[in-house]
Amino acid sequence: MHGKFLVTLVLIFSTLIFIPDAIAQRHSKGEDTDILRTRPKLVVGIVVDQMRYDYITRFYDHFGDDGFKRFIEKGFNCKNNHYNYAPTSTGPGHTSVYTGTTPATHGVIGNNWYDKESGEDVYCAGDDSYSSVGTTSDAGKMSPHRINVTTITDELRLHTQMRGKTIAIALKDRGAVLPGGHTANAAYWFHGADEGNWITSSYYMKTLPKWVNDFNTSRKVEGYKKSWTTLKNIDDYLESTADDNAYEGLFDAESKSTFPHSPPSLLNKKADFDVIKSTPYGNSLTTDFALAAIDGESLGSDEVPDFLAVSFSSTDYVGHKFGVSSKEVEDTYLRLDQDLERLFKALDKKVGENEYTVFLTADHAAVEVPAYLKDQGIPASNLKWEGNKAKFEQFLEFTYGTTDIVKNFSNFQYFLDHDVIKNLDLSVQEVQETLALELLGYEGVDRTYTAYQLWQNDFTHGIPYILQNGYNQKRSGDVMIVLKPGTATSGLTGSTHGSPQVYDTHVPLLFYGKGIKKGSTVERTEIVDAAPTIAVLLGISFPSGTTGQPVAKAIE
Image (cartoon, rainbow, N blue to C red; front, top):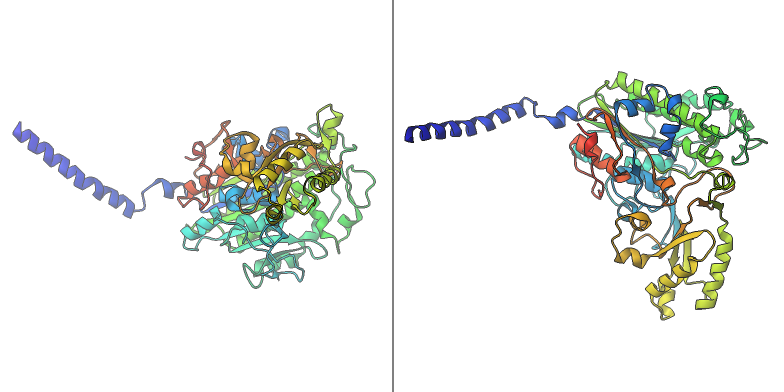
């Protein structure tokens, strides 16, 4: 027994010595492992502006094999993905996708908002301390300085000691600046007006690189100033309403909102390049520029991962003008599907078929045109807030003897003047509650909440949970208003967004490429889950404010 025991000890001791040595050899040979095996050379983040999840299912039979269908049939589809905060708008949406957290943490509480410190309205990407590059206009005075935390793009730059590149591109400045984060090599956006050029900010560089100048001087943009006709036979667009209806807006000089769209501003080659944004050609132009960036910046050309952030903004312009059930929206998504195919095939060729990873989501969804819903017998309305505003001011005057108790109203939040409240020897909490109760009885209002409620409670589901995630203690207002479902303050035509209702929160979250499993889930995921999922895939730190969770089922 004693001899056998010694032999056993020797074998165990030898094994303990051998195993670490074998592991060390594997590490030294670069065989370690899952991280290197699944790490892509390039991550492409795609945000489609104002995309509802059901656009995938509605238009699916019209899609080709290598656009949206590549995501669905070869990638991973989160079918029950939602924004977990409000307001659901472009600035907060792009920031939340890339920071993995909500406005409560990252601080971008709207596209524009009232700044309590300066007493002025501010823009989410605006920064007068920088100058425009590529234009003499003020359109380039932008930076990401209002984001309080890091983005996934920042973390990749930090992880690679700034060797990995980040390039961000969108028609909208905020669609490029915010995803690029604080450390992007460049963010580019489209300046239309009478120029039609891609520009940037001195935050990133002093002059445009040669490849951008070459793209601008090629005047490829002028090829998109053409009549907008449908990609397929319009009679086959059964997934949308009649082309001639009362729920759609008009281009300038149009008398009807029907195809083809040929307003003079679209056909004039010398001016009014902004009109391209409101056609699917804006997405095609964005794709052209993204492909030029892959070449010009040699993205994905070595083992150090790069990041390309692309936002397709024309979908938002088209949705606002024509509405989510329009033939214009349907045609825009069929054409976007072709642009995605172009992007995928270029990535296959330039980076390698299994060397890149792509995710696609949206910055918000949208409501059906309220007038259309109403005509279908569904509760909905177009609300003019001016009537409520006058009534509210009368209430303030009667109750407090002054309207000065309110400083500002924006993003359906009332900002109160705490100094005035103090001088009136009143309690801020009591004033908040009094105003919230008063506003609850106003036309179109479904619910009201106070800042005090959001400070004192930890909501875990429903509308209060969504509002709390959108509430930033330093930047948000004192009284929050939620409109009734189907209610909007926009015009009688076109769709809008911004609410905590499910039609504004349900958006796609699709993954495809290296390290991604094929499959889907109907379990709830949230928009803040995209960034930590990519962080796990890359083996890098989560963004510093992350509150989301990796979508474990999507990762190999």
